[in-house]
Image 1 (cartoon, rainbow over the protein chains, first blue to last red):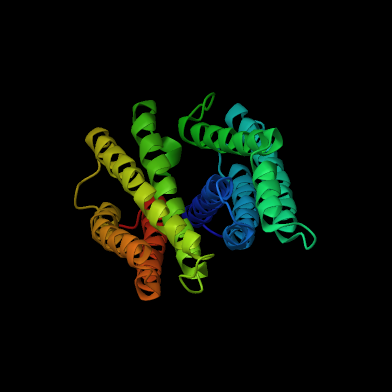
Image 2 (image 1 turned 30 degrees about the vertical axis):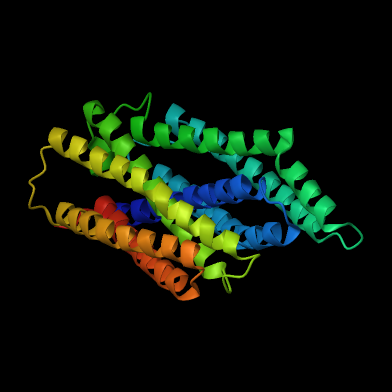
Length: 160
Length: 145
């Protein structure tokens, strides 16, 4: 049975990885919205694949070790308001990032469209990544992550 | 069990410290991914080198947030300054700052002079910072000695 310190290290490291993936998506989104050529968009979208792997690893580790800690530590319960709130925000964040990654996949296909001109491929890619859906998904992911971090640090409603 | 037992007055500085540390690690990791993904500083991949340089630039204010939060937390927490885990934190933070500045300079040299070698060295230095950050997280969470 891992110690409290080991579980906390794995939980926090996973959270760092999860946040790193979100920042990676943010930077790819920021620059890909401004590209003028489809080759540059494809180069940028190349870093989205490893970033998506990081998101999966970070999200899985955060929830796995977080729930383990909540069960293992005396004084923590899964239904404590700050833990239950974090679980809900984790679901929202994870789903927003999953859907955002699907959007990156669409943008990749638009940048590669064989029958379109380079200008229209770049324009289609920019339009997808500048869409209201992209903004909403990315915003929801960011707010969710910040909310989880605030709940984990301030622990509202915790007795300890 | 420090996190579990932490008084409320420590929460704000710890929040700033952890947020800064997470953003710092995230920008550095993104720089590693972008600079390492640039196969050559060709017209298409030049944007990846620029992404790497801007990510390392964004890591600087994140570092200030992390370091400022750490000092604010230290002023409120009655831990002895010679605690091993605090020492590890200082070594990683202060040593990491020097490596970050070197990586940042090299990344911008790679952008300006379209140098693949400078981009590669900047990526390696940024990877060292990311690895050191994991050691710092280990020290902060397990608090050895």
